[in-house]
Structure formats: C-alpha cells, structure tokens
Length: 302
Image 1: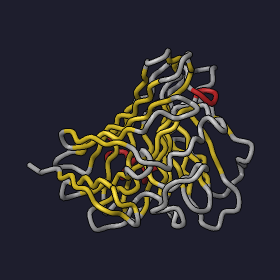
Image 2: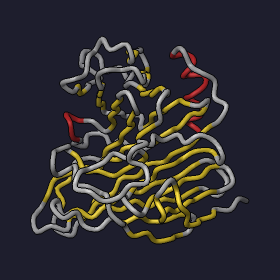
Image 3: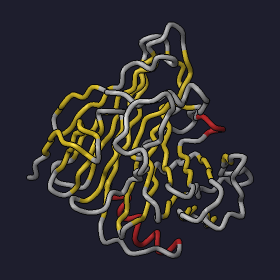
Image 4: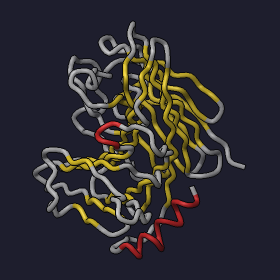
C-alpha cells in the first residue's frame, strides 16, 4: 500500500506551496494566491500543466492573472464578475490524503471558493471537489467551472454523442465569435473531436459541448491526462448547454468542465467533482481507431 505525503515547500518564487505526492505523481498547490494547482505530473518528470513564465512566483496587483495550472471559476463568463483577481493569500487545511484550499470571499461577487484535493495512495489519480458558496445578500444563478490549463504541444480528445435518435438531432455545439470551423488545429471525426495545441497559432479557438460521456483526454509528453466528471442528463448548463469546453491559443490549452446552473440563495453552496488520472508511455494516436484501442481502455479504468 502506498503512502500520501504532504509537505510545505517553495516553488519558483512562491514561498508557501503545498506538495502532495504518493511516490508516483506529485501535485503542487499555491497558497500565496489562488486557489490554484500549478503542477501535476509524474515525479521528476514534466509538468502537464501550463506555467506562464512572467507570472510564476508573483503575487498582488489589481488585474486578474492566468498564472497557469488548475483554477476554479463560476460561469457564465462575465467581466468583471468572473475575473476577480486571485492574487492574494488563501487558507489551506490538511485532510486524509490531501488538502482543502479556501479563498477569502470575493470582495465584489461575494463568492467563497474551495477546492478539496484527495490523492490516491497507490495510483496516479486525484479527486477534486470544487465548492462555491454564495456569501452575498441575494440569490445568484451560476455554474461551477473547473478549468485546467495544459502545457503546450498536446492534443485534446473529446468524445462525441453517437446514440441513434432517428429523425431528431443528437448533437449540439457552442461556438465563440473567434472560432473558425476550418481551423487546421481541429479534427471533426465521427466519434471524436481532437484539437491540437499549436505554439504558432495566431488566433484562439474554443468550442463547448454537452459531453454526455463525461470525459476528455490531453495527450502530451508521451502521457495521457484523463479528466472525468458527471454529465447530468436534462440538466440546464451554461453557454447553450455545455458541460465541457476547450480553449486553445499559442501558449496553452484549457480543458474545462462545468456543473449545471443553480440559483444559490445566500449561504447556499454548489459542488462539482472531477477525477484526474495520468498514464505514461502512451502511444501516439492518429486515427479514431487508435483512440478506441489506446485511449478508451484508459478512460474506462479511471
């Protein structure tokens, strides 16, 4: 049986980071800002997450910074509500095999954000419970939005809905104003959509879907990062029904999951869970049959 270790350490200029490891993978959460998980990967290997070089190790300031890593937002996206800066100290609490990160109540939106992290003792696997509490004086409708910013060079895999609905449509998709359907980074397959990150890209690309299978993968560094969550049928999701969204530009790719929309009364909370798994020495995929053969069994094992 493995053992989960939790230590406090410095990471690239941030003095108060928490490292969680189990001898296979490590994860680093920042408490000088956040809540933010800035690193996730095999011990001693590449960070699967993006790090924005000129922002790493910095704190303070009135402008929101992406930093990289994994963050917690609330949807629908709106500026300034969504973009309240998270540039200051947060609390953390140790728990069995993990920690809880808690941000002070947002000054303007009046939301309290928490991420509860639990690492498997003997697998390359982590569970995250995202929680948002309305600490304001009136009800607010929102969705929990979990965004993971991945390092350059990888490929997103998104399953498509394949059920037969007869004469009725079986798929929908949300497109953003800057999204081009003929973008060379995206492949529209029969069973999967894939999106390749390109450091030479000049424009961003974003799509959203009701991902009924509840998973997506990001292939990079010879590894497969699998994200799983629960898509709730018939629930009302933001952005015309999206439980999953992906965005890419020249310096990163985001894979994002969302909870259904909920009207939160004062002091009421909403939660959204994700499971992450990391697999090494994964073959490159160049076709949908490759995805079926190589990636799907990994997903099913999570």
